[in-house]
Amino acid sequence: MNIVLWIVQALLALLFLFAGGTKLILSIEEMQAMGSPNQIVFPALFVRFIGVCEVLGALGLILPGIFRVGSGLTPLAATGLIVIMVGAIVTTLKSGDVAPALFPLVMLVLLAFVAYGRTKLVPQSGRSSF
Image 1 (cartoon, rainbow, N blue to C red):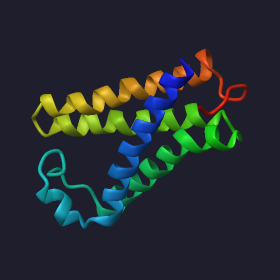
Image 2 (image 1 turned 120 degrees about the horizontal axis):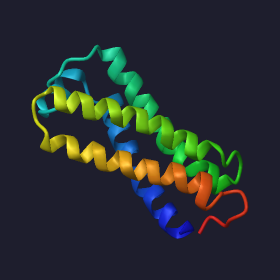
Image 3 (image 1 turned 120 degrees about the vertical axis):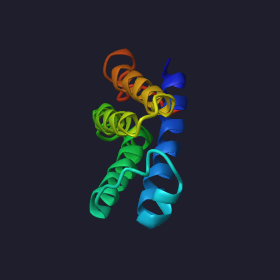
Image 4 (image 1 turned 135 degrees about the vertical axis):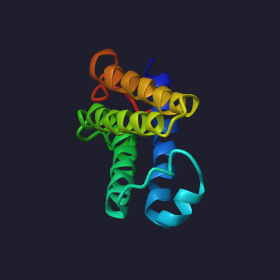
């Protein structure tokens, strides 16, 4: 179970590093040109804030286990990213399409698995990284 959790954590971390980095690097106009759900206009500062939260959440999924310090931060980071995914689902549904909302829903389920797994199933403190 520990290996499965690490694989899921690594994939989620890569995804959120990419998504958050994109929000931090690209201009708001470039993101809006990408299509749904980016067509809903949010203030630029809010988009940058979400990008920072996604990058920090991605780091929080991986770094505590690698450095074996603050293992309670991994479920906390997953929970924070769950909140972001709830917002992503609502934003996507608000744009009128249901199908694109399935991707953030799957991410939410995987994040819930990591949060629960690192809290109840396999605590990180007594386990090896890989």
